[in-house]
Every structure is written in C-alpha cells, then in structure tokens.
Image 1 (cartoon, rainbow, N blue to C red):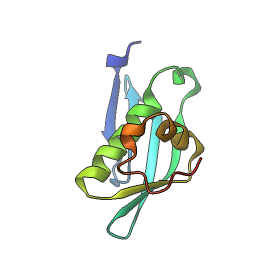
Image 2 (image 1 turned 45 degrees about the vertical axis):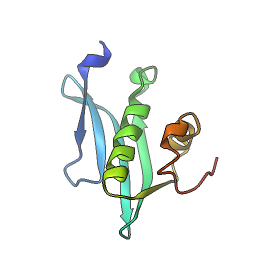
Image 3 (image 1 turned 60 degrees about the horizontal axis):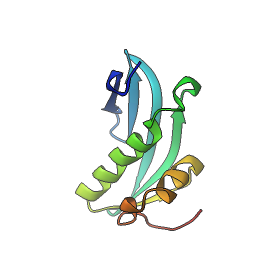
Image 4 (image 1 turned 135 degrees about the vertical axis):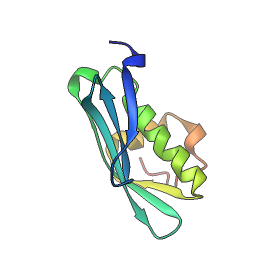
Length: 100
C-alpha cells in the first residue's frame, strides 16, 4: 500500500472527514460547529495498521482548510489533534487555543 491508495472523503453529515483504503474506512476526524466562527474537533481515529502513514495530518489539514474557507477558528479536545497542531505552526492562524 502507498499514500496514493488512501482517499479522503467528507462524512455524509458534513461534520468530518474519513480516510479510506480500497474502500475500507481506516481513519476519521469529526467536529462540531460552534456558532458561526468555530469548529471543535472532538474525535479522531486511525486504524492501528496505518499509524505510520500521515493520515492524522491529512485529516487535520482538511479541517484546517475548511475552517479557513469558512473563516472559523479551531478548538480541539482530541489529544492526537493537539499533537498535530503542536508540530505544524502553519496551522496557528486557525488555532483557537494553544493548549497542549
């Protein structure tokens, strides 16, 4: 399997993204819209066999891009997302809090 085998899709309710490999759901990130200017990432999941791939980063990146287009800030209660934000200062423009 390569990075090219992984596809990313918007969840049916529009409040998250999933990662799929050959049709199998291997990762997911979900968020809740808070008011008109915030997104709170509340959950991520990556199948253990895919932990060495940049799936978490790619899922977070999709939420960040969405937040930017909707002029929202991102708050997270998910520890793995906090780790992604901590390692990527290019996301600081949408980060609501610098909690770690």
